[in-house]
Amino acid sequence: MPDSMLQQDDYTPLDRYRQLAEKSPDLISRHAPEDFSFIDVNPAVEKILGYAPEEIIGIPAYDLFHPEDANTWANRDSGVTYREGVYTSTYRFKCKSGSYVWLETTSRSIRNPETGNMEEIICVSRDVTERVQTEHTMTRLARVVEASSDLVMFSTEDHQINYLNEAAQKTMNIDKGRFPTLHLDELVSRETYHVMQEKLFPQVMKTGNWRGEIPLKPDSMEDRIAVIQQIIAHKSEEGDLQYFSIIGRDITDYKKAEEESMQHQLEMAHISRLLSVGEMASGLAHEINQPLAAILNYSRGSLRRIEDGSMARVEDIKKALELIARQAVRAADIIKRLRSFVKKTEYQRMEFQINDVCEEISQFLEQEAQNAGIRFIFRFDDNNPRIHADKVQIEQVILNLLRNAIESYKHSDQPVKTITIQTRQKDGQMRILIQDQGSGISSQQLENLFEPFFTTKENGLGMGLSISRTIIEAHGGRLWAESDGRSTTTFTIRLPLGTN
Ligand code: ADP
Image (tube, rainbow, N blue to C red; front, side, top):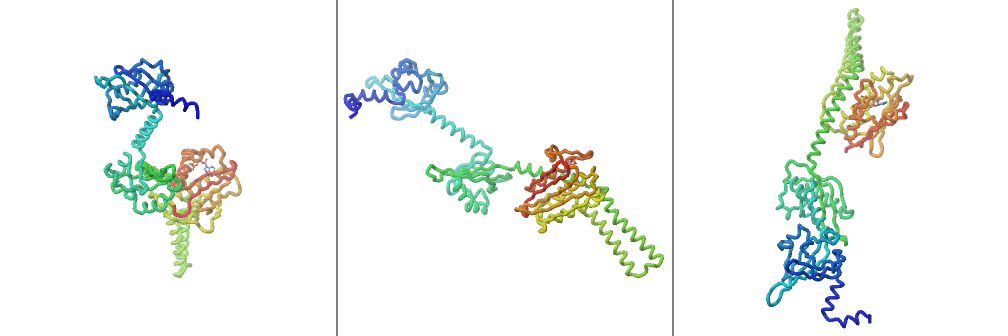
């Protein structure tokens, strides 16, 4: 039998209490009723407050309360709980070092049984600094959630919503009183809820987290647009689901800004198209002049032949008139193309074949290219892939790249000048490559090429590539340039195929 056990049997109950108090990690103290000064204290005082027991004896405890808590203690307000003559309070108490610890103290007053006067107060205090700080952190976190501009909701396993922060209540116009009976299926459309039930929640249960975008559409919502962006499954250590956090965002302002920017982009694209037409004026004039000149020639020639009698047969006259009509249609076509090109259009996506668009645009520039001695080479994907995009905007981009390619030959004296237009379909993506062997682009220029107002041309505006890139990115694609710095330059447009 160990020695200590043998010895313990010799102790009186009071000794045992004393020994317990000596060993206790809690601070056990006795206080005088008048000023609450320490009469006796166990050694734990050293660890908790930094005082040796003999140092603290005689010091009034009131002097060591944190100023903000002293009143709480003195007035026994709500921070103090009573239970059969025992009361418990949590407060800050000053250590010898000057810093404060949080103590949770249970006190009992000892009264003289005859006079009823208070003789002393016995306290058992525990250092709860860590717990109180955690509680404070939790309170702060709760305040952050409540004040967050994100919409935060908590739901049970069967999607009963039992908490909505203020932003969620405001955006969806939901009254606090609705919480107890509010269900997730009231916040999204029926089809969406079905998909969430079938796919999304099983995934959240598996991975713990889901991110994406789901429109929130409660009947109560008025003029706001909001989406769920994240769902988190909170589980116990055993892996059982405790609740879901559903986090969303009010995107009304973002959507409005997006619409405004789209509108702005349309305006810019329109202005840029008008500018291109201005720049192409001489080429276009030449193109329209050709059928007009042909009409004039045919009609003069025919008149002459009618007058000198060499054209008398109705068939011959009909043939001449047909030739004239064909040229008139050609001129009208050019003007029609021009009109549709400068027309202001709304942002409108449709499905179309990309090879056809490349061909149309190069026809448009054919005259300008011919004048500069440049030939277009087509390397089209045999399947003539379809893309789903705004046709006018894509035409705008291709036109811009082709005009830049033509202009890159401005100071070139190469005998053979070509521009290759290639379309290629691969891995669900469409690529359109426009390649020239003109001036080339230095690596330094490549860095700034797509910046607005970057230009090396005397009368350049430097907006073409910047607008082109915005248009392609708005379609979920990419536009970039590669050049060996001397001659070969390739611009590549990458766009998603089909519907997007
Ligand atoms: P702008 O044509 O008005 O200058 P862009 O934004 O269309 O505006 O082009 C910006 C600059 O990019 C041009 O000034 C030119 O220096 C360069 N660039 C564009 N395409 C080519 C090309 N194919 N070859 C060489 N340089 C090019």
